[in-house]
Image 1 (cartoon, helix red, strand yellow):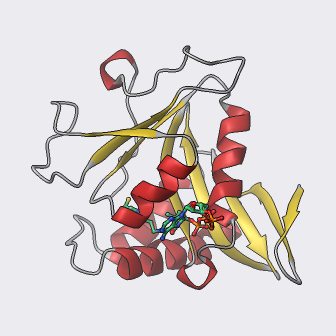
Image 2 (cartoon, helix red, strand yellow):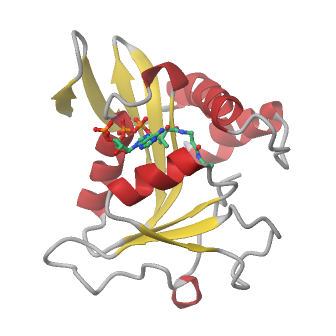
Length: 180
Ligand SMILES: CC(C)(COP(=O)(O)OP(=O)(O)OC[C@H]1O[C@@H](n2cnc3c(N)ncnc32)[C@H](O)[C@@H]1OP(=O)(O)O)[C@@H](O)C(=O)NCCC(=O)NCCS
C-alpha cells in the first residue's frame, strides 16, 4: 500500500516478512541508542534481534515503512496494543511515525493503548500530537520505579469515541510483548 510521498522516494507501508527481520532489528537498536542512550535495556541487542526474527515478525501484526527499498520504520500491533513503534533516526520528523500510527488507528478505530517505557520528552510529544493522552504508569499495571514510564491511550475516532480501552490496562489482556 502506497500511503504518502516524502521527498523523492515514496514511503510504502506493508506487512513485515521474515526477510525484514534484520533491518527491523537495526532500526530498533539505532532508535533506542539515539533517543535513550543512557537506558540499560533488559535484553542485549542480539537477544532482541533473535526475538524479532523468531517471535515478533512470525506472530504477525508487524508492518514496516519502506523507502527506497529499505525499511525505515516499523510498528508492531497486538490486538489494540501498540507493542513497538520505531523509526530510523535519520528519518525522524518526516511523518513516518505518524503514518505507522495512522495505520494502527485504521485497524483499531475503537481505540489504542501503549506503554512507553523510559518515555523521552520527544516520544511523549509525538504521541500527544497524535491524539494520545498519557499517564505515569506506576499504577500497579507495571512497576519499574521509573517515572518516565508512561501509559498512553487513544480513545478512537468519531465512531469509536469513548469506547476504547485507553488507559484501562486492568480491563484488557495487556500487551503480550512489552516494549523493551
Ligand atoms: C517517536 C518516533 C516514533 C516519532 O516518529 P517520527 O517519524 O519522527 O514522527 P513524525 O515525523 O511522524 O512526527 C509527527 C508529529 O509528532 C511530533 N513530534 C515528533 N517528534 C517530535 C520531537 N522530537 N519533538 C517534538 N515533537 C515531535 C510533531 O508534532 C510531529 O509533527 P511535525 O513534524 O509536523 O511537527 C521516533 O522519533 C522514534 O522512533 N523515536 C525513538 C523511540 C522512542 O523514543 N521511544 C520511547 C521509548 S519506548
